[in-house]
Image 1 (tube, rainbow, N blue to C red):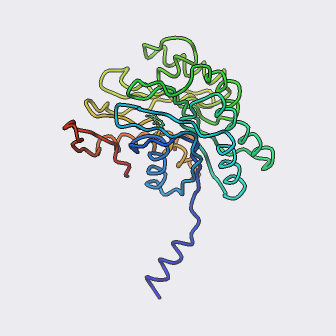
Image 2: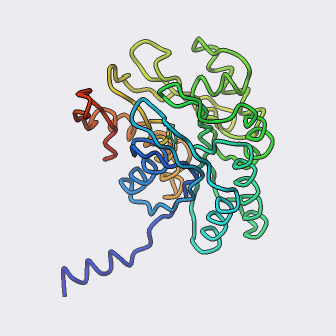
Image 3: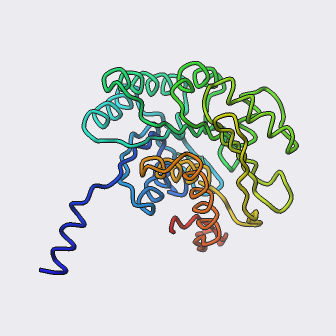
Length: 281
Ligand code: PXL
């Protein structure tokens, strides 16, 4: 009996479930592919609702095609009706129409289930390569339709700057921005500082009226495509597993830092060295 029984009872054990609502990145470093690898590495069963398909290689987006809003809504609704989802996240939503469809599906879910599922919103607007991923008018749809459902919003400095219509250039400005966003949207805010502060990648969490700092040595010279997706997926994994928000962010920061440090590397067909995150613990 021994081993076989152990294996069977292990597979029958309940597993936390999380849903990612995001775009497909053909190069698999970001988007729904990064989310699934992250959820899997952290012991969470990942469900997906695809919002758009992006043809890209690291550093260059060549085409983005949105999914139709009916199929975006349907994916979310069938999943929420049938799986005990512990937490969910949104990534690239790319247009006003898709943000509205996602907000509608999530709103409907809350009305029928009678309780909220913790929601992490990564307001993806611009790719690491600098390519614009969200139509400019869609920022209002985020503000008015989706943010009201958020547990946590995870902007980087550029995204927070676009939301607040300002430039964030100092640590003090970061603190003010995190608090302002939390007050405006009645959600917790994780403001990702990237390389603003010298040698450390510093993030600020504004949660329940308190500011907390998470920092890690900044990895210089490593391609970081997909870190935002990985970070928010790792936080979502933590919430689905029953961690507090602070603990989920702390573990996720460590996970992203390790995924960067242990990155994969290969030579592309043009001879350029390509790097990609290794999603592992
Ligand atoms: O890293 C942002 C991002 C998110 N989602 C998808 C992407 C990208 C960046 O390229 O392709 C699908």
